[in-house]
Amino acid sequence: MEWVAFAVVAGLAIVCAVGLVVRPNPLHGALFLVGNLFCVAVLYLMLRAEFLALAQVVVYAGAIMVLFIFAIMLLIPGRAEVGPDPLGPQRMLALPFAGLLGLVVVLVLPQAGARAPVAEPPVGMQTIGQLLFTDYLFPFEVTSVLLLAALVGALVLAKRRAT
Image (cartoon, rainbow, N blue to C red; front, top):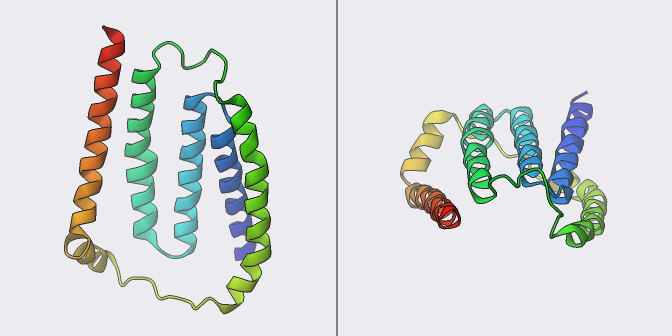
């Protein structure tokens, strides 16, 4: 029964990922990305990594997607729903590559699954917190500065177009 749930959620994640790539509208693409992030959170729950699932929903599907949609609305004011797709033919090239990647996954996954060792999940949030604020403090801070720089850059680009 667990395999059926995994197959359904994984299939939905793939559909959302393909929808993200082939949709010409950036807002629709952002919504497909939210769907994909929720599917990843469900996969984390199936792996019994509750903290990662919660962080996935709160941080990525919540905060980061609000930032993406905010930036899209600032950079494309009034043109979010209309206009020709400048990347139309290039987006259609993504479909054969996605099919090839799916074929590789289907062929390699059964062989890799038979040999993969089962890893024990971390003890809990205390272990994750200690690792995050000791060994991984620098990457954590760099990520926050990178997101702040992206937001400031979006605001600067939007201000230039408005004036």
